[in-house]
Length: 341
Image (cartoon, rainbow, N blue to C red):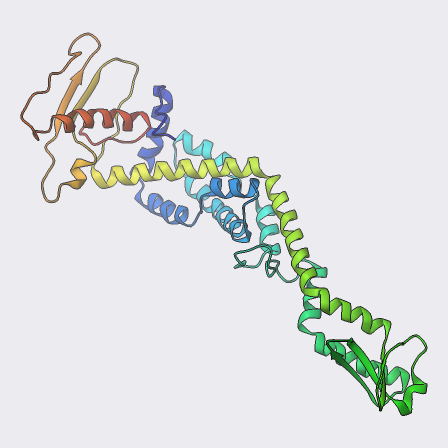
């Protein structure tokens, strides 16, 4: 966006240039910022996906992970004197409550699809935990019912079983059917036993059978609620994302300037364009082992308004014209430029 809309106000341009200068002079902070920023996903893209309803659990986890790095960026900018960095620091909001909510709600590595379950962290929802317990411990729950029924009813020959036709049932030997409580409902008669179902077993059967569908639907509902809560913080997230993006660009400008011997341009309201020992930023990177031959440029509003560039094919006429344009563009987006001055 900065490249598409270069600045026209020298004050704004100098504000960016001063920030770049701070980082070119502070290699340690520049490199620490680069390492920290590398761990922050594109927050603007993430919040866009969340707002438009296309985000998955991985997007929310990535959002939280990125926001967790913001305090580090905030601290790294503190000693830098440029006014722009201090303004950006005020924009950075770590949204710790939101991060904590996301971290407590979602597992560390959510599945790709939010509709298949397995996305909500244990301990976040009591109901989800209970349904999962039913799914994973159904055999233990059935044994528990069997043992408690033996104790309360005094029926020794009792078994809790299952078949595809009748589902779960309590099988009682015919010799002990007189001990069966009145509240039980007979389901089937066999040669040696009677099969019943109690209200407790009926409820457990329903829970076991529907637990998977129920927990999957419930997890999706909780995820949607969490997503809505994130959407309520969209303005703060976008502000932080914008600040992080600007810091990222300024740090990149400083890295390129330090690596390639760029200078800080002086931008003012005059109509003069004066470049000393200018170089084409792309062509000089393409040349392998051959130094780029720099060129001066001076153009003014009254004198030297036109330069006539002559020479044979492949002499560098287009390269020279383009390097002047690129240097001007780089200066007006707040970048250092490939020139002596």
